[in-house]
Length: 124
Image: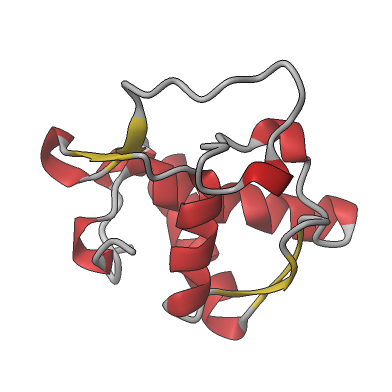
């Protein structure tokens, strides 16, 4: 798990993606859209897509959390109360009230010309 104050592009873009999937697809995540480290999540690996060991989750200040994939980010989002994972293997989630509020802040940030990596929690 990463610290929320260190989150960057990958966490915030994933929350925005989850919101879209909740609105358009009943909360079902497309497994092929998720970066998956098969060493951490072997049941979630999409066939013919391999984890690049040089990549990881992008945090603030150009830091990389090695081995940390989108599924780890999703679990981080759940631990912070932004969403509930209803089924990890089936990729089904539900946004919480807090998650809806922050997703709205992310949209405002992006509409204003901001990038996911520059989003700051509580600064809309």
